[in-house]
Length: 335
Image (cartoon, helix red, strand yellow):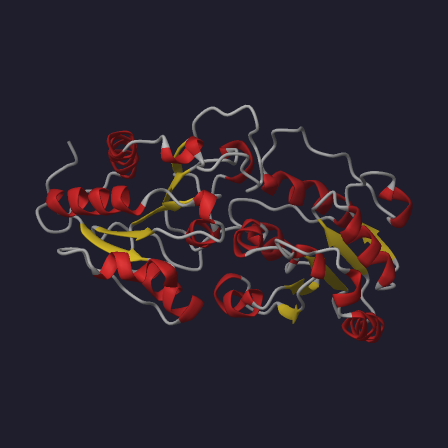
């Protein structure tokens, strides 16, 4: 019987997708349970078949009001501790150098606790591997915490559940993001979608609910409304490339094996480029406050809105040439 490992990733869809190579590698040695938000249960069958998911939303992951302690789910926390003791995990791991995660790991009562300490939180942990370099990608933090457990994420452990292929010329554009400061202007997305369609590509647009009015008012653009995460994964199966903002759907696309092109603004590609060997991107404009983690000091996120359609189209053209992609309708190459 394999030992049990609890993996903690309490934040968003993109963070879970970045953890995928680690989780798949861990499944070779452990019975894995992921403690995460509800979205983990939706993506688990596609990305981590056989892994268990315990759904829980940590109060400190709220964008606002995270330290209103009187509103915290104290009863849920006690239930979580009781559940952890029943499961009798051999180890618990978090790749965030976040003392809040480390307090939680100690609270859950798991004997072996692996993490990168910060602000004195090493006393809460049993295994404290060295932190990666400052500009290391988020995936490198999972590699670091995997070493004490004998877990080595590799390209094969992060391999796609979808078979690769260039049999279609479909490009899936996702224009949304969890925070408005990460959304490139919709009018420019529409221009890019039309130009790619003019070149002969089969373009599909997926958007956030608040963007539907804009997209449905656009003529000549195909907008699809997937039914939840499962529907979005089905759309990805038909795509040869994904274009979008620095947001969770791009990371999910990369984890599913689809090459991604990301328009960055206030975050650093060095940290958060989707994990795919063919991933492309446009970096956000210069700003003395980057990375600002969505707390933009200006009325407008100029690092993102300052990126022109011509720059993005040029970048996408280079990206598609690296893929060896050609339009599905005409077979012409991107010029």
